[in-house]
Length: 127
Image (cartoon, rainbow, N blue to C red; front, side):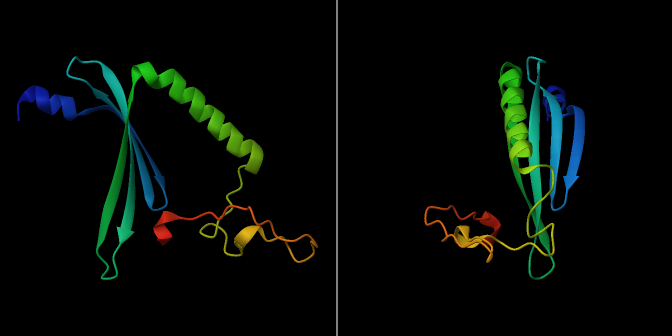
């Protein structure tokens, strides 16, 4: 491999976020023209029945011309989630006493009938 090709693959600046089975890598890289862009990689560990494991990776390339719009939408989306659901994590993985709300069912103390137009959340890891 030529020296320039090796430099093109090096990270200029990196940060890592470990989050359970997922790890997020944020890397600044250089283009062939020596301009910078960002890659965001999600790596998720999967364990097989025999104890072996493998990783699935997904990568996003983010270029300077998209930084402002990306940051604006990301800020808007995170604010929306936090404003509507708060910072508390509510899921069966994070809370031992979590009870899934199937088919929009209400607690037994509520006399209303379940909504027939409710959405059932599906985790693709369960498929």
